[in-house]
Length: 130
Image (cartoon, rainbow, N blue to C red; front, side, top):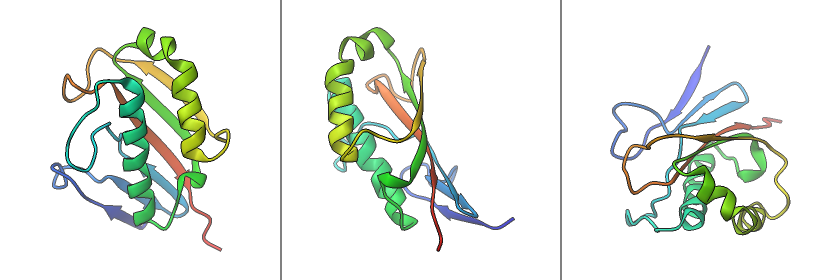
């Protein structure tokens, strides 16, 4: 099995942001900080940044959001997420440019790597190599 890796960020020595095997790309969970390292207070703002970070990893492999087939959202407050679900999914639809054609799981967790994070999104993508 041949793997193509993309390592980036402060933990590049410990894990890859993306691992491509054949046509399947698995992405490490992406957090809600922006390129300057700032983290919005809102779950929606963090979610939007998560997708920007996801897009950056996908681009390293020649992919886009269109290639995502599965998402897992880890949130520290399911109630907050569900209270804002209309705005969150409306924003997500704008990010994708359509209603996303993905499977999705929402998991409530007690904490993420830093207490300021409210959401982490992990994805699987399929890259068609025609």
